[in-house]
Length: 299
Image (cartoon, rainbow, N blue to C red; front, top):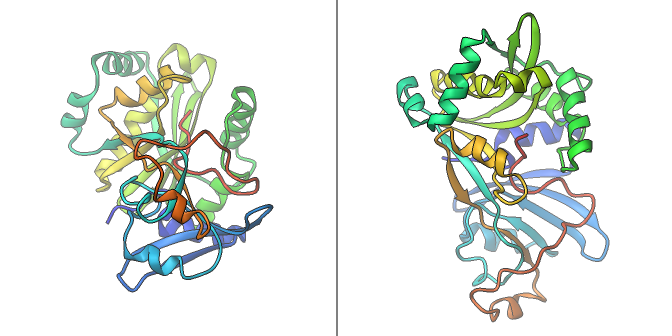
């Protein structure tokens, strides 16, 4: 069964390691989901189910507990009929299928393949190893500085190191080196038969030789060789980050729309069911104190 990072056992183990108020539930229908619980001003006791299952019988059981539920489901179907109020329109992610190396290389866009070839001709070498459970690791420090500079949201400090500690060998550091210097690196989080491209940093010298192309290609080959089915490359936004979107999609990844953000509350349910079919809600921020919703960003 397909479990995105936020719904995986590995995420649950990490959350418990960090002491987050996360519970793993199993419905009578067999559906399993992770939910993050918080007290939030105005809304009170809130449960966040991020990248959760498609609408089904499990939701009836989840709704038996009082209080609102924030949902970031994988698909949008059925939520309006269930009485959920739309808050945010769906994000789009890039899902990269894995397979035989020749097939993956053939699926690369020509420009992406050319940059990979250029990196290899320049002498860039790559390596995959277990990511150490060190909150002060250089990759995490540089990614934090990158997040501040580019003003994007990131996972809470310590998450990646905790993932490695809670799930031995499931967090992998992929590096690209030229002339003895590490020019690019990324963190791959394995969960079940899939992986998430969590963070990536390219130094100036690495950009000059397309080192990140070499890093991602190495991650693809490593994951495929171990029987993984796909890599979640995170959100794609062709408006605010067109270059990043091209980088992801030119790997052969498929753009997949998620289900948006919904608020399930008994008071709003009757009104939500009568909203016009095309009404997708207005931009809104999640209440403070909740972790980032949806898929992690790929830098």
